Length: 321
Image 1 (cartoon, one colour):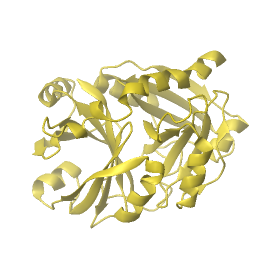
Image 2 (cartoon, rainbow, N blue to C red):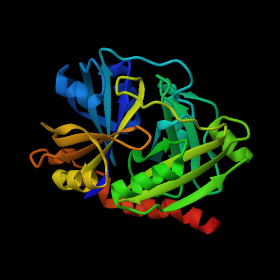
Image 3 (cartoon, rainbow, N blue to C red):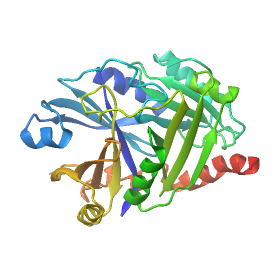
């Protein structure tokens, strides 16, 4: 089965600077550095003509982050990383003190348009940009007890021109039904967080294990279809899902019509294979090696209390309904 989100991939211009930024407040730590070879198999899996790269796997309290600097990276023209632009759009990092985390990340070079603010759920929200312009959502949970933990990963968000179609795909992929679906805006509180005027958008969520995939479709401004991003394009590059039986998932998904990019590959991390979702976003399925237990989400530091954190953060929202 597909267990949870293992990691999110980010293609960067400056690996060392990105490592320094994402390790702010010990949100992540480097567990391994790696090199990617420029060979036919890797090029086919990534869909690019030059796969040579260096990178680092960062471990957080509730998820991993894979940073990769390709030797042949690029940043396309146009607003491909706007809040409403189609694709893997942001990750969310949570902390008890959202304002403190916000201040520390700004000091490390993050861009911003508004300080954290509420949406009536008891949680503080803010969108920031890392020093290379990639979107990050910060959520402050003041209801959590002091000293609960360092900042932790909560979810990944995908923006789509056809959210319902995308949600149906991830329901099939994760074998989990959509948790909820809502429409939002126009309302000033949403404009403030997004940094746009008069936004109208739909959202849906799939919760599996202790992970969440968040999906958005903007009506104003309109999310438009786009060509699939490649891993060497600067920005959020892929979503990695941990599985406990890669062959079993390969067989199940093949019967559902999913086409995989190449064959199952074996590395020091374990066994993995790539596919693309219905929007063309790159997804990796990873079965970590039993010899590398530190690379499984099951062994992350926050596991014992993640469920309590999720329940506490949802309580204010339930009270609003």
